[in-house]
Length: 281
Image (cartoon, rainbow, N blue to C red; front, side, top):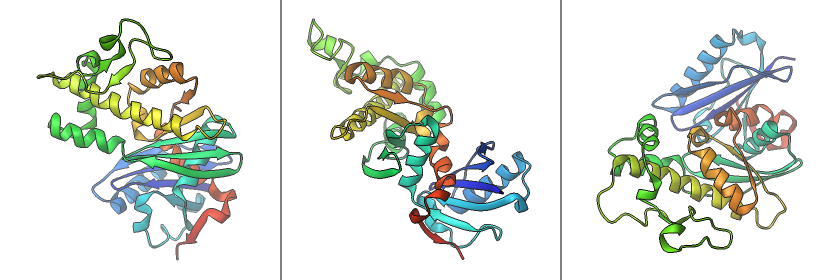
């Protein structure tokens, strides 16, 4: 059996993985100005880094918003478009081995996919995600560079911008510790540092995602959430989601290669032929 390639094509970034005999190859991430340039850049780097010949590849499974721009097979290799939400679900299941979970894909916006065994359902999403951080940082911090935003946030103090329970109550409220957020940016009354703004933005977005994920599970018995996508790489994820775990008795899982979750799921859709939209001719 040859190598199965999974490719997640975003607007300007592409993530690519491959499986050979159930073994994951070295994943590749490439950023470019357009989806096609990103796709071919990632594909070339992937086969070079993994010393793969085109003849070694059995098929290519592509997904993501940028896949709409692909209208022909890659280098004559059988190429399929697959559903992004199904890919998210399969990627989350791959990371955890769990059959009942909600996969939270944190990209430009955020989507929620519920997995119950082989049943994978997109339950909704919110327009808050990495795009929110970049857009507000452009306005407030005059930068769109993620590395710069992370650097600023590392020196920020959340208590300088967020109104916390301890600011309005001398005692913790039921289910809410004194450090819980009462109002994001609710403490700002004058100038605050760029560092404080950066940590406030990241905290606001990640809290909104985490709490929305929890709300998406209310009509089910699921309390395990797998976080995938580029935002999972933010170092603040661990502390913010840990605090939500304590308050709501749930479990957030951030896989080591979380940013490749959708690409991994795409490569695993071979057994889900009903979800393939078409073969590219």
